Length: 367
Ligand code: FAD
Ligand code: UDP
Image (cartoon, rainbow, N blue to C red):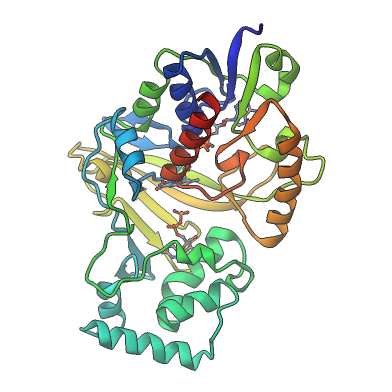
């Protein structure tokens, strides 16, 4: 008999959901976390009364009522609706691409006029079957929007030309022929009042958590403690990168406190030209309708990932997906280990998907 039923590597959302389900099933768990805090990339901390999203803006959104009900057990969510604006060399456009964007870009008034304009630009570009992000974008919203709002931002974000990126990345964004600036096509949306860290803390209540602890540095010692391991770190790191390194995009955040009440009038402003070195500026207080006298902003600089940096976005192109498939077959052979989460499964998961998958896995495992 080992000391714990489960060793959970990573105190992010996936690990916290599994820990909570295991606790309810009467199982004992130890959660270990490399960083000095819980909550993984959704970690928030308070500065001058403002909840700061340390690893980038996180807006909870889902169409899955079970997932929505699930998270609402651990926090009250406000009614925040994400409506970022794009700043292209001083011209301001609404996002996602909708009638407000089309009106500002072309002066069109009706959905039919907007659709006609897009169709005309798609035809001029000669695209029938979009083969990459550039072609996909032009066929969805036309050349003008592609040039001003997508090309520069995407090249900065991914460090690659739009012709070398898969089209699914741009399909994440809605294109709407209504005057609706809601960034997400989701039935449920909001920000947890009191911050995400509190939400994760509530999930982990009653579970033993050890911070500043790297599983891979003392793997054998930790394996001896538990019957089974739930591993939410990078899958290639688990195997010592022996088949090669999966690529990620990393992000550097420059966060500062400003002695003013309102810096940019919106939580998220995207800088879509190529020359501005950052991709976006987040003004954290606006996620919670804050009225504090000061404000905290973060500039986001996208960066290539190198071993030792924080991995953020898996780069799911063909080459990396093929390498992941090889790691996955190794992972499937690790009898007592479940690999989960954005890093463990090398998938561009949003929070709701992480919860959905973690719940499925936990319920199958614990039933
Ligand atoms: P993580 O949060 O990465 O947790 C994994 C944990 O494992 C980390 O804390 C890590 O330190 C720890 N770990 C790794 N290796 C080891 C080890 N060897 N030993 C011990 N611990 C280890 N989703 C949305 O739904 N809405 C959004 O608006 C949104 N915005 C985002 C913005 C950015 C910039 C990014 C990068 C992501 C965004 N996401 C968003 C996605 C969201 O962050 C993820 O879906 C979610 O955080 C993934 O949870 P996870 O538990 O899988 O991974
Ligand atoms: N995108 C863009 N211009 C914008 C916002 C997004 O071209 O102003 C593109 C970009 O390629 C990005 C993708 O749309 O990677 C998906 O955007 P989303 O906001 O979903 O990215 P996230 O940062 O949430 O992963």
